[in-house]
Amino acid sequence: MLLRLNKIIQAPGCVPFTHTMDLRELVIGAQRPVTEPVEASGVVRNVAGSDGVLELTGEAHTRLHCTCDRCARPFERDYRVPLHAVLTTEIQEEEDEWTFLIEDDCADLDDIILTSFVFGLDMQLLCQEDCAGLCPTCGANLNDGPCGCVKEPDPRLAALAQLLKDKID
Ligand SMILES: [Zn+2]
Ligand SMILES: [Zn+2]
Image (tube, rainbow, N blue to C red; front, side):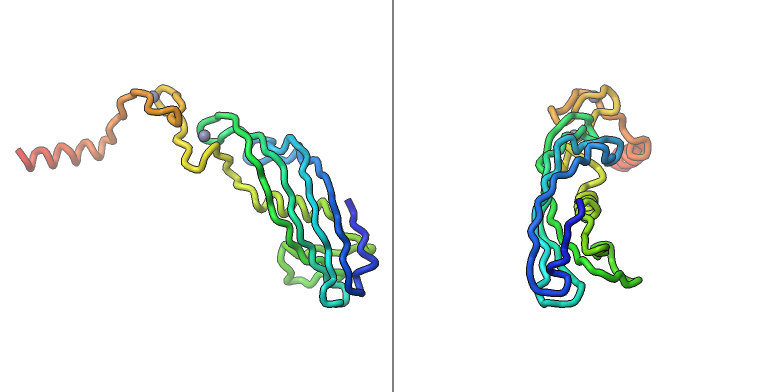
């Protein structure tokens, strides 16, 4: 969506916006977790009455439907990301990724929201921060508790244990 800003590019004022985006095709890792619409709202302001430099603030949110990258369990998560961008009629070469161009008196909201959305998202989607993952031997989900497999001792640790044992003996 293009947001028309002609009234506030050279004069103090604000233009509020609400925008719904479809990001179902967005791939994060190897999945498409944005199955629900992304709702964004905010405001663009020309606070200082400055010539051609505006500030956008707001928030975007949705509910993600993911599969845990570590244990493969499906989970849902509310996802909120703040929107904050500088809009300008002229891009200088050294501008950062949060500066967006105003073209024909309009800002491209899709571009701004998508950039903020992806930037705030963890590239690894985990059902919980300390997900225990799957047992490499039997494939059980270790978040449900120990699976009963006996851990293969690390051969280096086994050698060390033997060494210590020899010392004590
Ligand atoms: Zn998990
Ligand atoms: Zn196991």
